[in-house]
Length: 511
Image (tube, rainbow, N blue to C red; front, top):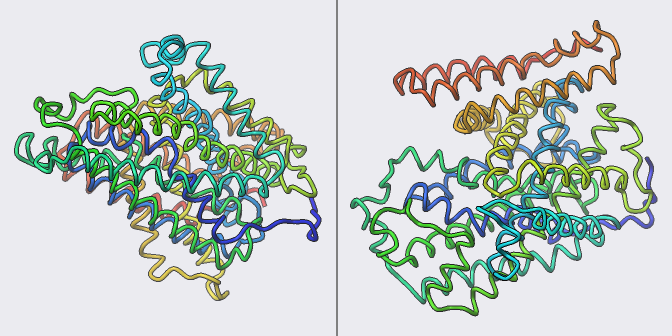
């Protein structure tokens, strides 16, 4: 739908960076540092560094794609639709929409989980054995309604609110880290348990990227590309915002992780990092270190930081759904945008309703994190595939931003994300395959309405289904340790390369 150019507001580079930072620094900073230290010990710092590098590479590839398609809506969720065809594009748009939609209640649940410790009189009725009660679900829904109100009047209001929230997000984690180091500095913690920085093995460093919320935290850079059409000078600002938001967030996370490792007392980890037990990790540690004022500040920020991310994710979810409707992958009335605010309010309300239903099935932060990581990996896989297909289809057009060595880096990114996807576990992957198959059948039934064209739709996307089946098999092989590690690694590299080739060269049989 056309919109009025004279009244369209285009947020600046600063707003673009704050959108990225606000998406990355959400509930993850309240939980992930604790979860990573508990899982892998002091080597958690390496997990954050590798996680940042791993997400920086696809972000740079996405920067080239997004600047090429800067006039398109919700670019990062429609990559394979734009470069391949809408049938395989649906299989990427759907995980994009689903993981971002899952993040909305995840951020609200993180807020409620933290605040339940702050207000003990009602907290015991909100969180029962680590899961939300009926009252807790009501509070989560109230927070999500606030996210909708901020998004209702478009990116102008969203960016203004988000700019303020992001400044708070930057200050509070840094101040928390510095105060932890000031109050309790125990550098011997790095090697005190079992005399090594990696007491649970160096392989845990990479597994933690998926299982402890690191990839979950960093992959928040995607919304920068989702809002690309609405940003000022997107061809210049998108690459800067993508890189800047990841670098800034990585610095904050590494400092925070370091401070957490040195701040816990030696007695807490005498029997191992895995024995740490917190519900509201940073706030409880502040109380143990006699910094009650800092705990109060963290409880306040637990409502602010996740809410800032929740606002961005709900707006992103609505834009993805709008883009899918415009690509005829969803009913067309979801694609109708407000002429001034450039957002489909119908998609916005539908996303909120869907988020509300998810709270019932995923009633704590940890449950959501694994499924979010699976769909994040699936959406990230599309970036190198789309990048190489675009280079193949249009090699001569000058790009506003060109990734040096992009073709080689895209393969490395694809292989790395494939490895992370296999670490998510066979059960989570089976659930994702069933989810995609069911919705793909619904999509074919609504859009094509006959078996012949539905079969051709499957042929137009068969490489994605093959990839998912192979990843599920490898996840099972890894869990059961059926083959030696070297054999498994070689098989993964071989099959990854085959899948990569066929996904890049996927044909469209419904032209």
